[in-house]
Image 1 (cartoon, rainbow, N blue to C red):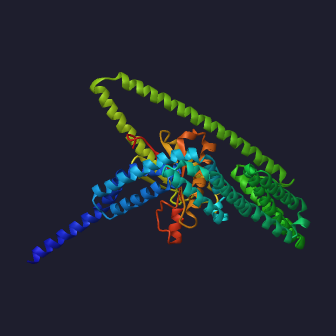
Image 2: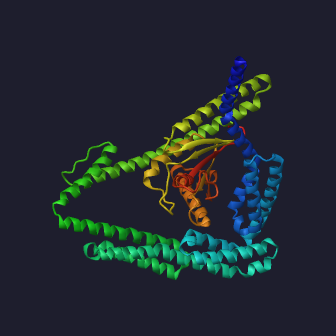
Length: 492
C-alpha cells in the first residue's frame, strides 16, 4: 500500500513538473492564436485611426470599438472561438463602413480637418479645453449627419466649426507659448537682467514682440510665431542665467578663476574624446576652433559612410537580381535541392541577424520582441520631456544603434509607434504620441537617407498599454516608442 502511494505521488509530481515546463509554450501558442484571430481587425483598426474615423464616422467607430473590446474580453476569458470570430466579422464590417464614410468626410470637411489639426498641434485640448471641446462637439454633430447621409445640413456648419477650431488654436498658442515667455521675461526683469545683461534681455523682448505681431497679423504664420516665441524663451532663460552668474562673480571676484577653469575642464573632456589634449595658454579659442574642425571632418565621414551604405545596397540588389536569374534558369531536382539549401542558409543568417540585433542594445536601452512576421524593438531607454516631442542629445547614441539595426534588415518595412500613459486628455495623448513617433521618423530620415515611403509613424496615445496605468512604474512602461520591423510572410 505504501509503495502504491509513493508511485501515485511520484506520478503527480511528474505531471506538475510537465505542466510548469509547458507554460511558456502555452502562452506563446495563445499569443499566436490571438495574432491570427485579430490580425485583420487590428489592421482595419489602424487604418481607421489613420483615416480619423473616430471623428469622421463616430457612431460606426464607437460600435466597432465596443464590439472589438467585447471580442478581446471573450478571448481572454477563454470563450468559444466561433463566437469571437462572429464578433470580429461585425467589427470588420463596421470598420469598413468607417473607412467609406471617412473618405467622404475628408472631401467634405477639408477646411475643418485642417483647422482641427492646427488646434491639436497647438495643444488646444490642454491650453484651451473649453473652446476645443465646443469645436469638437459641433464637428462630431456634423459628421454624424454626414454618416446618416444628410450631407446638406452637415456642410452648413463648416464655417462655424472652422472658426471655433481657429479660436481654440490661437488661444492655445498665446497661453502655452507667449504666456510662458512673458512670465519668463518678467522673471528676468526681477532678476535685474535689463541692467546686467541688457543686450540679451532686449533681444528676448524684441523676439516676443515679433511673435505677438505675427500672430495678430497672420494666423497662417503660426510656425514663424512659434519659432520667434521659442527663441525669445531661450534668450530670457539665457539672460536670467547670465545675470545670476555675473552677480555671483561680482560678489566674489575670486570665483572668476574657478569659473574659467570649469569651462576649460569641459572643453578638455570633449577634446580628449576627439583625440587631442588642448592647451589653454592663449585662452579657449584655439581648442574650440580645433574641435569645430574635427566635428566638420566627422560630418564628412558620416556622408562617406552613407555613400558606402548606398553602394552596399546597390550590390545587394545586384546579387538579388542574379539570384532571380539563377532561379529562372535552373530546372529539375538539382535546382529544388539548391533552393532548399539556400533557404536554410538564409534562415540561419536571419536568425544570426536577430541574435545580433538583441546584442546591439543594453537591457536599459531596448527590448527585442518577435511577433509573427514582425520584430519589435521597444526603446525603453528613450524618453521625452513632459508634453514635448523633442529628442534630447543624450539619446543620439541609442538612435545610432537603431540605425545600425535597421541597416541589418534592408528588406523590412519600418513602423514607429508612439504610446503614452493614460494621464491627461486622450486626444492630446494621441497627438503627442504621434508627434513623438514622427520626431523619431524624421531623425532617422535625416540621418540614414531612407525612402520616406519605407517608414511610417503612428500615434496610439493611451490605447495600447502594456502595464497598469494605476502605478508610476506602469505608466513609465506605457510611455514608450516601439520600432516595428515588418517582413514578408516567407522571411521570418
